[in-house]
Image (cartoon, rainbow, N blue to C red; front, top):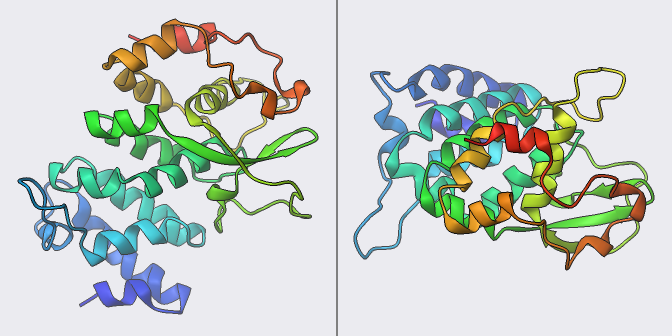
Length: 245
């Protein structure tokens, strides 16, 4: 009976409905099947997404209290093989990865936790390894329009340049290095991104992932960003190497 209220126009109603549904996303919750019913996967039939999972994915873009519970719900549910296909579809991963990379994202740590769970799947790993995301270059960095939501607001004024697609993984590594800064004075990010090392470890389970982390970083797109951004070596940093198994 609470599920239809996830789409209510009133954010307080959405929050109340989600806060009451959240406990049922736990692995041993008695009514967890609410989130799994209607999901079809496997065989030759194309996987189908249930309305409630679609709602939760959309609510990750909502205001802080709602998006926080939506991320937590998906983190809890992402251990289900039945939901891997739905949660790993490219459009949603583009949002998740762009959101993590955006230094202004308030819930980047929860998004990193979700990405860690999802990349336990080889299909999600393959998508992340080949993922491109849009950036708009600014004088002191770049903005990620596909991360835009209530907890990662766009800059004001909005960047005037055209969006350009670039490989996401190098920027994800840079985000982890920035998140590992110990000094609050030097921190550029609102999240610590402690779960990204497990993402990187999952990615190294494939030959393409090992090649990326053990070899040189891609160079065909680095000129897209302003020169002041690239102050670190093009090889993966020591912090990332230490995080890998």
